[in-house]
Image (cartoon, rainbow, N blue to C red; front, top):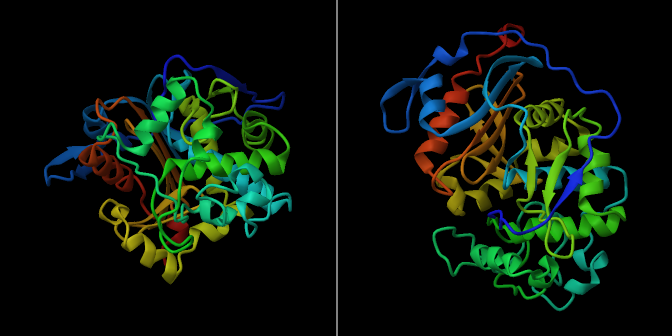
Length: 348
């Protein structure tokens, strides 16, 4: 979603613990050649320059090998927020506080009369409900645009969610929709007995050793905009990626793809952008040249790229003039793919 400029924000505290150090081992990776989406050739540096990059960081084996732009100023990461909320849900489930198999109404009774009445927590975690919500940024009448306007007009986020209705059997499809994350965030707040800003602080931001507080956009009542309200620095987003690359227990199921997940993804519009991919736990996954890659993505060109096999984590914060730009997205993915050689220890 977009950031309505008149809405308030909340601080996501980094806590009082030590900052995770990021050792620097500079490497000439920006000169690596890339074949662009249109078939032309460029270097990684040229792709970053041509795709409106504000900040980028590339790390391998936990050390920064290249970086540029404004690294220590918080920037809106839009739908990468969804992945952070997905982490909160995964951690709560791992601790036995949240049951992914229960209906969302077990935690949020206010959804009983809505399209989410029989939806499980797992369904919204993986965006597999049957609720109608059109995620089209080019259509001012689409649901995602209506949600933007709803918040800008000083209405409560949760009141909007209760108006949505089902159009398909729950669990029968994958379809990317921001409302799913807003429901998931509401459920997490009830299960975790705390507002989302506090849950992110205690479960994610402080444990990963963030250097700076993050910032959460809220509605007029102070409820976090779970689907796209976070602003973070590029270096702290890198620390988040390094935490994910460490393969936490609660994320292991998401890395694995099964036949049903692939069939549902194949039938969705997302297959065109990420052939062979899948979506789980509020993360995108796609096959890369050296193993599967985890992605956190936000409109206007925000990206978190994690390759576990090559121990490579890349961050790009951008200001694309358009909300979405398929060529810029694919060029950036190709550039980051080009930076992920197989480590020597994995070569047989």
